Length: 128
Length: 184
Image (cartoon, rainbow over all chains, first blue to last red; front, top):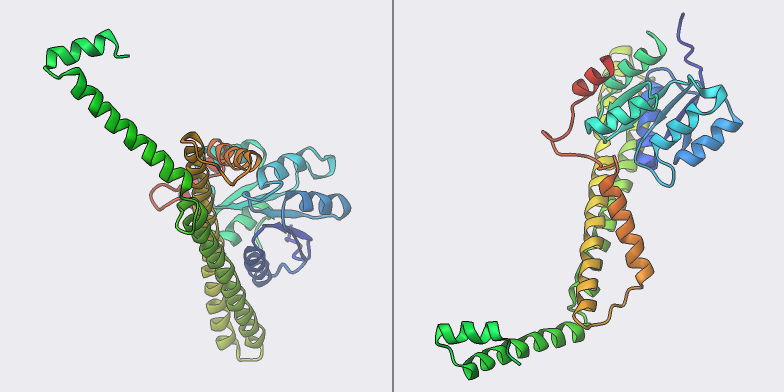
């Protein structure tokens, strides 16, 4: 099935620069229906009031970090299987395993390039 | 009063009691002088009052200026990208690829920011350890215990947590190594 490039995507990062970079790279890949949140709490509020087909989130944020956001999302009936990509500088095996155990769909380590973002999107959403 | 053990050691070493008391008195004076210097050195040159906060301010300024620079670069790249559609397809494609490289390179701001934040936290840690040392030596700290406790709890929790921020090449797992974890 073809990937719907109009799907609503939520990107979460406390660095506005990163939000802007991810938004621009997504736009280049044809995904323009993108919303933003600055931490896990804001993302959770948006998820409760709007529908999203994909979350791309940083890990290291306050007050709610990306791992806690992922865990909270997996507890929401509507979002149990929501694709969730972690984009983070945390690259310790223990960190990656913790995210995997919490149900992350894929994991991108910063700094990343456009090709990596595209390949992880494809692994989660299917080819486009 | 001198303990029996100490008296025996001095006797065996051939050092007279008076000589030993003189030496101990010098050491005591030296300790008292150091305490006095630490407890009164609260002026402009004090490490915890001046140097460290200034260093932290400088790093904050670096954070702000790199963030602003990154946004300016991104704004310019976005402008180029929007104008690319007005050119022929080959030029447009090449401009788009160049803009992608700019977006990728701007990752630096986030990583530099995280690294600087780690250094700032380390400075806070040092600052509070110095404050504790001053208090232990009889000086007075100008920071509240609440503040010190808060910073120490933050640092301690971070050390224990999975969040350590960007690592140096060789210490960090590569994207390929992380991909392998997901394959298993």
